[in-house]
Image (cartoon, rainbow, N blue to C red; front, side, top):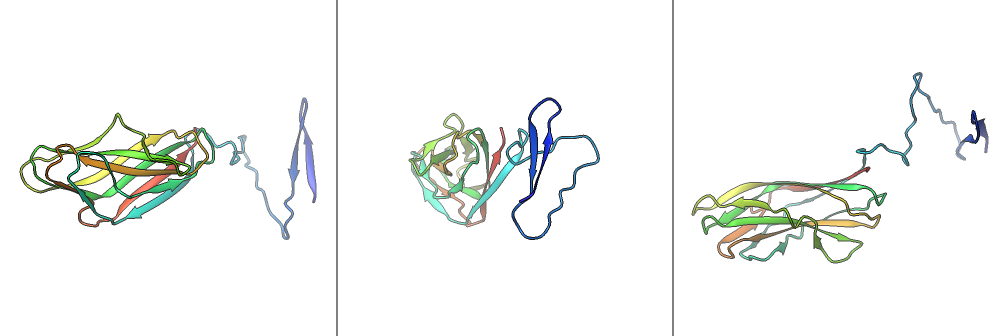
Length: 186
């Protein structure tokens, strides 16, 4: 294996080492001054990876306690400092009265296969039934999480009916719902 050593101006050196593969590889350097970015030094805010999960499952409940939807997306962060941007879009909530009851959702996560726990218990995605009639409301949810791990992290929305009467349906029409998980460099 061939290598080129470049001595630093004051101390140290940089070694350019050729890969041990057949054929040739060309590395083209820019003609302007700048800094080469490696995968180990991505700037803050860079997207390091994207994972997407989808579902068409439907679930109904009258429960006033949070219920797992069963819709799970999993990502394994490459660095403990990374943030995970969770975006859930599509599908529809459907509510059959009591009028004025709230449909509430919270995002839960599991780290390394452990128990699910709320990551946004101070924030509920809230929909209020506008009248004593069945209503359908589009579903959208965005949350930026800091799991501080390089173990697999799974996310799952939980939801409930505030009054415990009437029926709410998660994705009642079996419309495609997507959960996009983006690892963001911090």
